[in-house]
Image 1 (cartoon, rainbow, N blue to C red):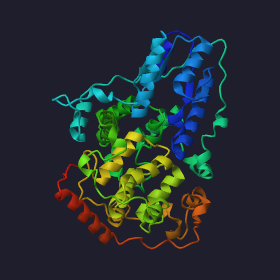
Image 2: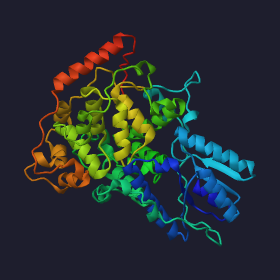
Image 3: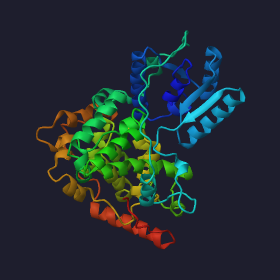
Image 4: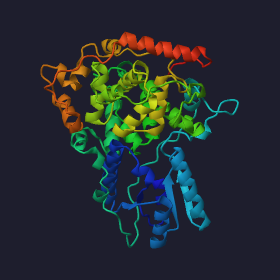
Length: 462
């Protein structure tokens, strides 16, 4: 988008509008967005440019800026969630009605969600054929970064980013989380290069072991905020694949798993708010409860679950294997509505992605597309034995079970609200529930739903 704007030859005014949708972001996501804006402003300043910040209704703000600057039009990168689509459609129509250029560009995805269709013209509901269809397409190389751009003779007034207080809801957690963020395009590219050089070859084998630091790329944070494009990542993955790196194809598959989430959100936007499989609409999920609150606090007494939740509070992110474990524990062992977990992740993740978050939760709960079968209940203890056999991940994040807890484990107590009254000096809690009993209750409830007319899809994620 920026390259196309520069190619127009006209002076450019880079703008970010903090509208109601951005205002409603969860605490961690909104704070991380603020960090990204600050870094982007620094990058523009290095080119002799500015980032103009305005707050309010997107159309009203843009119309005001057009009047102030005499701009010929507006260009932006597309977003794909239903709210953004509705907003951008209205903005485009209103601007064009005034004779202005109003153009949106792809860039957040490898392929537009509506451009991949089955042989019958429908949309893909299972990942593996979607992957094959996307992988068979050719993708142009990423557009080179803009190195020069022309600004206006007179700049419009900008809000001060500090006045927006983007991190207010993070409170003391911001200071704990900040060292774990890698903000901006330069950091994202360095992250990608380091991963390709040192870890992509072993990615498929090592990616499920959360104790292996550096086994995954960590790029979800940068992808979520547009600091790196998927075509850049795809191109690097394809180069590694052609060089014979064993894990490169699986790395590319994970990138396309994200594309699948957007494909589904585009064609079935209800995936964000209710069960994708309509036969699950009447399932008797538990609502919020003291047990769900214990899960949120990372105090269930199941070390793998609690380690994952604490990792999220300290870093703003959570290992993918761990996400499946905590989601399964909440939705199956505790029989709690997946939307309660979805909402908590939206509040706490700095790499929050609406489409991926919804699909991931529904995949684990069993009510989503290409879902884990209802009888698959992850046992946290068994998963820990398999994927954290030396206990490194659990000790890294749970101070109470380590004889010499590290700074990361201890910083959990600095990140969480004081009102929780938690301290490393207190004993680690006993297990909240019996895992075997919880599993049997879940299986009974799920089987009852299945035999009453619902589907039992045994498809699993590729």
